[in-house]
Length: 173
Image 1 (cartoon, helix red, strand yellow):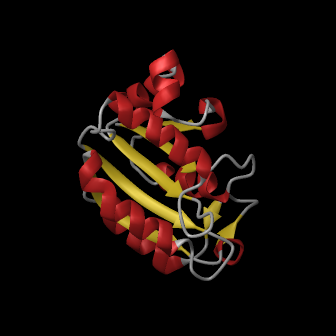
Image 2 (cartoon, helix red, strand yellow):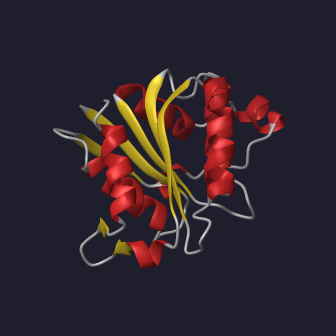
Image 3 (tube, rainbow, N blue to C red):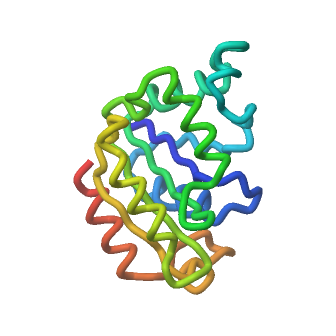
């Protein structure tokens, strides 16, 4: 099973990328492609730029990576209650290729933050909009207080309830 995993952040030390990677590793017999949004940096989307230069090749590469995957695991960083600008820009460009960005793929949506809310606001927003972009959300989980619930040395979630919930969701794919 081909799994595309990423943190919806451009932080080089993204805790959301760590969480997405961990979750993807819990899928049996997974061939995991862990991508970094820094590899998809492009001009800020505008209709004028699209008319002048077309859709950037990196947006096509991201869309194709989704198309090649059997399952998508993504973890959202929350910036001021919403998506990170890096993710939003990539998403905006990609949606110009096809509004069905997620191509009816099963998507596990996650979020985490250093705080107690665990980026719940952005996760709720992503879940609410998912059907409009052809994402089949198989589950959505937030990990609050990342540094209290994730062992950075081992690369594992230590919160047992989160792990039970995660495995419960993944058992259905």
